[in-house]
Each structure stands twice: as structure tokens, then as C-alpha cells.
Image 1 (cartoon, rainbow over the protein chains, first blue to last red):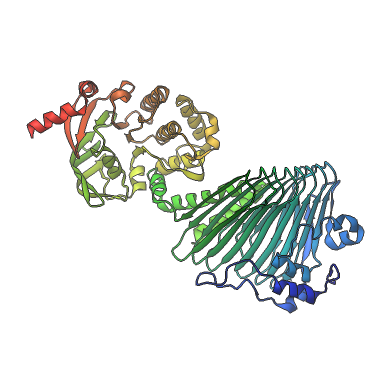
Image 2: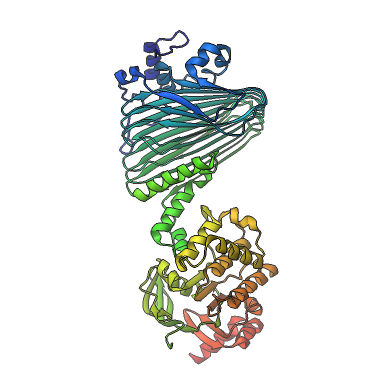
Length: 380
Length: 256
């Protein structure tokens, strides 16, 4: 399938944008060995652009199809979502656009609220590169939950975009848990634009891949919107994870909550940058950022950096963070109940993630996360 | 049978190099209630933590056995499995661990396989009723955002479901209002009335005698400066209520 090159930009131009756009991230350090400004891309594999998309739980009145079909048959709808939430500083999105083609389009008409979450599944073979672009357009008052599954093979590379455009009063929850093989790389850009009184929730987990990079953003440009970013990541072994969350309150009377739980074990390395911006005119914004880090081994490392820029004066902004190993008093408390130290550590470490796990929309997804986390804690 | 009991002999304990317990002798027999009273800083909580195996409490001498089993050589979890329980004065909050999951894990650890999950749940709800706890407790994380009174009730709930051979209550009464205090008393009574808890021995550590109106002690000890300086019956507790600790301190001083 030929790639869909967009907006007159050819691949070379898009790649140029990718290389020229700063990542907004720290340079490699003694802890974090990867250079995120110019990650190595296998051009030949990227051009082959393999991978497939499939769907489950497609509700009757929604439009759910692959992106190429949507661009052909629903061009006017696609145009209302395609690159509408992305911004030029989203570095890795340029890479997805450069090798674009694969993707999904999900459209909910006015006030439509299907019960079951719509499942989008991307799959690629071992060693393949995949660049999926998922669009969600929810019309006025629609309610929808989307669950994205990414199945990439050993040594694979994924670099995807998810975009949400939620119209007035629409509610969109988007969940994505990344369990890629430990020699793969998984990059993602997730951006949302809630309308007036709309509500958007990102629930994301980065558990697999040698290198996971994630940009998660909500731009609030209409009054009364609500945004939630709930993220967990847990590098173990030799894994590296770098997550940047951004909530941009450009309009007031809006509420946002960012909750991030980062643990690292083995020689796992994690970096988190949590941006909260409240623009000058965004009065009566209410933003909270809660990020907690748990170190489960001596060679693991977590950097967690909150960045609050507040230009309005009538706002509420909360930031809370903790970092450290498992609390000895908590361990003693549990062992004093007959629970072995090992089991107590396991329960405390799994419990650490629970406030984010609870934000995931389905019990099976929550259980998948718990089992994956349990395996990682057990393997440490 | 002669070695039954929580038997403490010549126990010495240091915390960060400072000796706090200077030779404690105490025997709590099965089914008996001992009260351990004393002013702040006398070493009561240190006794509780050294018996339960807190790693910061360094036992430097003496022995402690539970129905003949040496406690001091065991890690904290094994002491609990031997039948020892401590109601913490300041229990840790553990976000993400739900109350019933924790309680079931604790129950399974100390009494493996005796209860099916359904029976366990029934026991839990029954004990929560005794303690005046709302069933919504079961949806909460362990001690996370709990008020002081809620924490103490949860300690008592743990005691009830674990049904230990010996329970140490470290100032479980402190900071409680009259109703909560009564509930604590009721939960001790309920455990003693149950088949599992009929022989449970109690060591109730308290600063004030008021808890003893709800749980009548068989023996009252007074602790000062790391030693048990007086042992008597309920009358000793009443005396402390009337006269405070200073009078006893004077007496001891006069003897010494």
C-alpha cells in the first residue's frame, strides 16, 4: 500500500521537520543512554511500512474504519480531526506522518454513546516498523471509550499518533497499554483537543520495549473542558522510558488532572516531565499534577520533573510528588501481619500503580496490566 | 504445658545505641489480660516493637518465647505466624492495597486454608458490624486517608480476623472518642468470646486507665524508665487514675 503523504509535504520534507524539531528532552546522561534528538531509524524497514489494523466492538451507528478508507470516503469528516490536535513541536509525530498510511478513523455522531469500548488493534511482524495514526472524532454530546492494542514483534519499531477531537460536551476516554517485546522500540504521540464542556481522558502504560518514548498532551482551548492524563511506566532490565505530559489550559473554567506513577527496577531508567501551563486569560482553571516514583533496585533510576507555568491569577494549581524506595515502616507493618517480606514488597509495588490502573476502562485491561506488572516485579 | 504463655525474661533493647529496655520480665498467660501502664517515654512501645521484630529495635539481652517458641530469632512475619499480633499506634498507609485483600492475605499467612473466601467475607462483615465500621471500608486502600479512629478500628479488625494467640495493643485507646473506645472494648470481648480467640492473651499498653473500664485486666503492670516497677491488680490502675504516675515514681525512688 502506498503511503499517504499529506498536505503537500513529501516524505523528505516531513523527515526534515522530524530531525529539525527539538525533542524537548534531556540529553543522554550516565543514566539515560539514548539520544532522543536523532534516534536511529531503519529507513528501509520504515519504507516497507508494514502492519495491519483491525477492530472489535464496532457499534452500529459509529464510523470505524481504516484511515485510507476514511480519507477516501469521509474526507470532510477526517479533515476535522486529522492533524487538528497535533502541534508542530510534537517531534515524533513528524516521523509518523513521514511514513504514514496505516491508521484508524473513529467517528461518533451527536449524542451517540455506545456501551462497549471500541477496540483498535495494530499488529506488525517481527522486525517490522509500524506508523499507526488513530483519529477519534466525537460529535456534540457523544460518549466513547477507545482501547488501542499495539502488537509489534521482536526487534520491531512503532511510532504512532493518536488524536482526539471531542466536540461540545463529548466524553472520550482513550486507553493504550504498551507491552512490546524488550528489544523493540515504541514511540507515541497522543494529543487531544476537548471542546466546550467536553471531557478527555488518556490512560496509558509503557511496560514493554527497550526504549519507550511518549508525548501525551491535552490542549484546552474551549471553556469548561476537563482533561485527565493517567499514566504509568515501569522500566526493568535494561529498559528506558521517557514520558512527557502536557496540559495546556488556554481557556478558563477548565479542570485537569495528571496522575503519573513511575517505578523502575533492574537497570531500568525512566524520565518524566510533567508540564502544566495556564495561559494568562485562562482564569478559574484548576490543574493538578501528581507524580510518584518508586525505585525497586539500586541500579534503577527515575528523573521526575514537574514544570508549572501559570500566567493567570485566579486559578488553582496543585503539584505533589514523591520519590523513593519502598518504605521500611510499611514493610514492617505488612510483615507483622505474617506476610513475607517478598510478598509485602510485591503487594506494595503493585499497589503503587493501582491509582492509575483504576483509570483504565475495562476489567480485562486492568487485569492485563496487573499481570504484566506482577511479572516485572517478580522478575526483578 | 508450663512453657505456654508469652514469656519475656530479662529483655533488653536498644534503639540507635541508646538502651531503652533495661531488663523486662513479664508473662502473659493464655486467655489473660495484662495491662502495661506507664508515662510517655517509659519504653512501652519499645517493648511492643522489640517483641514483634522491628528491625530498628536491637535486642541486646534476655529471652522472649511464645508457647515455648523462641521469638527473638525469628523475622517479623514468622513471629506473626507463631501467633503474635501488634495493634500499631501509628499504622502505615499503603496506597493501592485494598483493605479486604490485605486482610485476606494476613489471614491466609497466619491461618492458611482454614477459611474459604466466602466464610472469610462473612467473618469480616460480622466483625465490622461489631466495630461499627461501614462496609465502604472494604473499597478503600489500607489506612490511606483514614482518620485516627478509622485506623484504630482497622487494627482491631485485623486482630479479629487473624485471631492471634497473643495480642499487644499499643495505645490503641489513644486519641479515641468515647464511642470508638467502646468499640475497641467490644472487639476485644468479641474475640475472647469466639472459638478462635478463647485463649488469646492480651497485653494492653496504655497511658490512661480508661480503656480498662471496657476490658477488665487480670494483671496491671507499671513501667518506668525501661523497667517494670510495679505489678498488681485493677486497684493499681485505679490508683494511677487518682494519683498519677508521680506518686509511684516517688515510691520507687524511696525504695531505690
